[in-house]
Length: 126
Length: 173
Image (cartoon, rainbow over all chains, first blue to last red; front, side):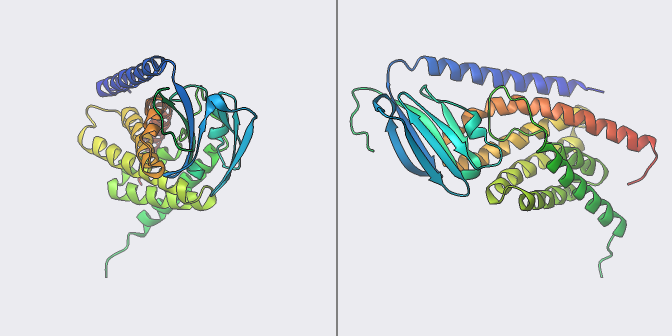
């Protein structure tokens, strides 16, 4: 039933995918001590940038679009808390805490990601 | 006047409606996902695409995918979902047709299905990069490739059984 090409194809795809995952994991753990900034984007519009280390009280941000997302920000973490979209992948992603973490609600075109900035860089806009 | 092949038209219409039903059914099946990644689906409708590629050809397959995506977005989703499914659907149909036509000696239906599923996910990610205007979305690609291997394998096995059944029944499409 299976032919030679099938096995080679699967092997190549697996090697490529696993290498990419390993590479990304290593890149992430090497990022060290940086200030973490959560960026909330809808399409190519940046709605909000939040310094996660400086969040005192938890805050809820509502993003409207084709659907409605409620994003919850707490000290050093951020997540999609609720969404009216069909698949709710954004909510299932859970808390984002590390640089490089991201959660996306494609139906609403909303993305939350954490970017790291070196402490000595200034000029971060809110 | 151009002669209309009624039999072919009816068969394709039936296949489109089957693809439509399959894509509605699969939205009821919860997938065990170790990592929540947008865009992972079983891709049951791809069984129909493979059948159309094998028994009709790439033009018919593209038409079926186009109409199926259009109709699915009417039933659920809307314009964003349509953009994603059409990008994935067209890319995977082109690649699967090409592999079936030129490399059937190298790849079985299962291999063709796997490459179709992987290309479907890649097309979606490319569309996600365009919609979100953010290259970071590409970070989902490795997980989507692995998901495509698994779902493509299952869909390929199903399509293979279906083709064998059709051959056995001596039914001509």
